Image (cartoon, rainbow, N blue to C red; front, side):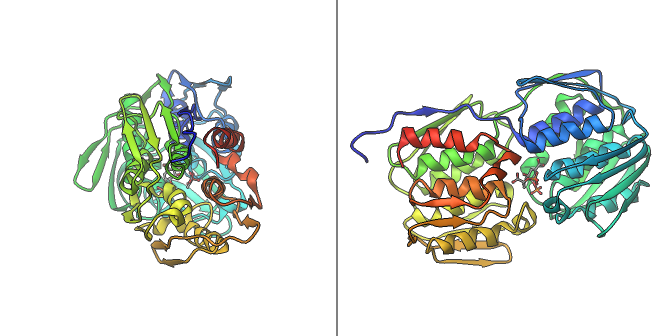
Length: 421
Ligand SMILES: O=C(O)C1=C[C@@H](OP(=O)(O)O)[C@@H](O)[C@H](O)C1
Ligand SMILES: C=C(OP(=O)(O)O)C(=O)O
């Protein structure tokens, strides 16, 4: 424990990317005007909103409140060219929304997003009668949807690579004429599907479960006013910062026991490692105790926080093994290899397998270490936490945090000033 215990910090963090993307889809599809309170303003969500505008939706944006005029009949234009930037939610949800309308809609994305897959979703949409064509590589952007509405019925989906395929189909269900029965053969990131179901409920739609089948009724969505929670994946960097700093205490209001986001479960990992954690009704607090134990943890449900854990793992007293995270290889970059490569640069002993990473205690950094980010916001934000304990860390592309948190570096520097490091 340092002589001067740092003052407890209460942080106001930006809104959830996942909730903002879903809220924009639901608002666009609903009957009436929806008001979103405290949406995330970042490259992903601005890109989603711009995409809606290209499809002819009216989206009014002030800093804290966005309003969307819903169009249950689909896009207001017969043709559109939409650029989805780096956002997988944008690139997978918007073509699905467009499929329910009438017109010809082309979707492209950044080189990073072009590399990421969506074939299982494309196949499911085609099975439902949607004319969807990939222009270059099968299962990748760019793609064109020639939309003529969706009749609905039963479809089978493998969501073992990304739950976003299932979320897209669930969101589409109420816009089809007969509703959807989605039979799911495999599924990762289950808590994101729970977010989808809870938010559909807030917009007036109840999805039923019959074993592996999700039953989505037709009938459309009802507009509402929806407040977006702070982003729990973003919070993981600040909680991890507290966990690696003896005596530091970080509280994030707006993320409590009723939070929708599974990534808040990252604090349970920190608790198992030795941090003091309290999840209250309306806020979560993590306090660094000076103890950080190693562990083996399955992160299939919360894989966006895998890099956060990997980046603090060398400070644990025993190895940290993270399992069941194969799909982190098809995110903004191959996150298992990016984490391993950057940890090795810091002198850490690391091994990886198809779906796991094992990190040994101890760092042996040279004077300065430049982290290779691969344009991945989470690599930057995670290794910024490592930087609390290892001097001289810099990034080849620090600005890529704009994807989910443009103000990250300022917010993290402020925390660093107050907790030390
Ligand atoms: O639905 C969502 O909002 C998300 C689902 C997760 O993706 P996968 O289902 O591909 O793991 C997560 O990694 C991503 O950041 C956001
Ligand atoms: C994987 C991520 O984003 P997405 O899949 O929404 O692009 C992420 O934010 O870590």
